[in-house]
Image (cartoon, rainbow, N blue to C red):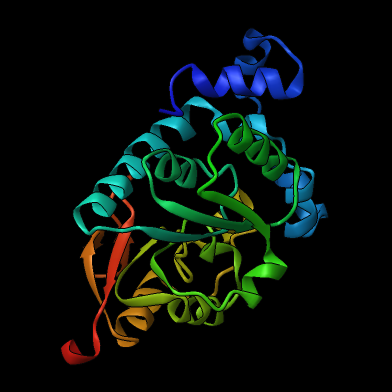
Length: 245
């Protein structure tokens, strides 16, 4: 597993610091709102600190989310996955460690260099990391696509959803999270994280995916005013086969 003490040991080796320093550094806030306001999203992630992705709060979230993804993959005989916006890529690392063939895309950054180093350390030949330019050239189709904490950073995510849909086999799984709540306390949300710029509501994003031929199989809750993600579980959609449309 890549949880508990192991991430801190890896970070310490990668950065050339003590494990104690690595654990302390994860408590630092890597999502500095003032820094985000002055940098483009791409430039911010080029400078992002891999230590911050593995703080205690994030680790608890990932343990629940990624274990859930792994169980879905086992239950649905998932052999290949594509992850867009992998960041620290704990999800793809966990899947690859358990035999899934994974490809993960993101901005080139210190975070991606750390994960590439980690992949080599664990000899995960079934895991590849590539920059976003290669994503548009990828003509393969996968058993599952993963898009966690990405869509809220895109003003209109429909084009991104279309690209992921083209790369997913019929009957495949689409794992996603979403923090878009356009029209609901947007002034507050933009101050909290100015890089959350999506202008579509959760309901509009979910509706767009369902209208493309998907069924939601996990992770949605509904209220009178909005659709939102349930707890730490990802939203999971299943792409209908042609005879199921």
